[in-house]
Amino acid sequence: MTAPDSAVVARLGEDFLAGAFGRSYRLSRGDAASVADVITWADLNEVLARHRMDPPRLRLSADGVAIPLDAYTVPEVAKRRTVYHRTHPAALHEQLANGATLVIDAVDELFPGVQALASELETALRSKIQVNLYASWTAKEGFGVHWDDHDVVVVQIDGSKRWKLYGPTRTAPMHLHMAEPEQPPEEPVAEFVLTPGDVLYLPRGWWHAVSASEGERSLHLTCGLSVATGADLIVWLSEILREHEIVRADLPRFGSDKERAETASALRDLLDTALGDPKVIEQYFALRDANERVRFRPSLPYVNGLPADPDLSARLLTTRHELRLTDEGNTVLTAGGETLTFAGAAHPALRTLTDRQPHRLGALATAAGLTVEQVAGVTWELVKAQIVAVDGAR
Image 1 (cartoon, rainbow, N blue to C red):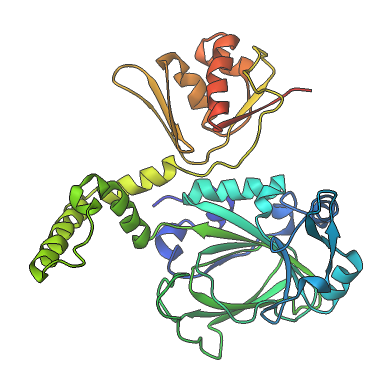
Image 2 (image 1 turned 135 degrees about the vertical axis):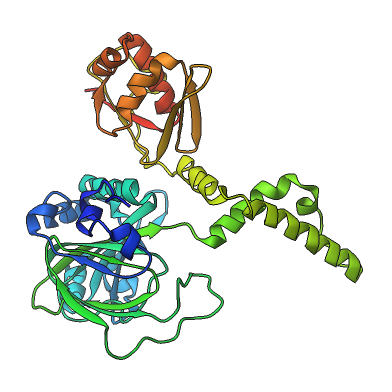
């Protein structure tokens, strides 16, 4: 298996997907310069100052316990009588100085550099990514020894953080598991300190504890993966098999043993047939990719169409998409839960957009041998489907 096209994932090694992904932790050392453009303390301060960060998106934790809101926020009543919790700067600083860990969820929606990192990982790992931010100043552990129900890629941004890994005590545990994993061993199987630029991959279910125990502050990002499981496949099969009457029919609650056995046998036969298809997993992954959640980005002020302006810039928003030519000569783009069909002449312009870089409409028109008006029309259809965003208006 070749190395994925991702700077972060590639640093985890050419054998990462085949050798470690979903199996064991992987640590890669880096340098501060490699993460300098992702996020800074100044970026964080700016967002905290200008955004209403209502809990639980912003929260504090210490020793595995969430700190009460009234310890670092004050209630505010807006003009429309809605109540929100405003972060109190002095109280926030006091809690952080006393050992609390600051957590902000989904920072990939707040910082362009973090969004670029998330998109890079999504492209390489074919998985939805949510990035959470963690900042701490003392050796007190924010969450104690715990495990997560999703794989993570950790990127150390500033300072240092000590990680203790204890390994898994249950293979591939899930959030809705019927039984809790056994407690971890007392001694860690690995212990190390992350410094700026270091990258750590940790599979779900691995017990770990984290602390800023090196006498300096720490800022790191945790990129959580949403991977497909056998449970997801079975749920999908239950949906597509609803075309069969036996799947839609009521179960024989008051039926005889024979009727119940016949129903179970019929359902088993349908599942056996579906799972017997050697391409069933491939089909499911194709469906997941086609329905990838697109990161919202509006294209205002354009609401009724795009002008034929060669300087307008268009960029594809999806990280997983399929572009193909049909036997009839049409071009079909499947992305973000949408399938759009265009004339074959649009294929060069759409193929150019699939590199997910900004492209001017004039350059796309030249590449496809089309007019700017024609490219603007194609691009507008993609904008309406939230597959492409357009910038350039003053």
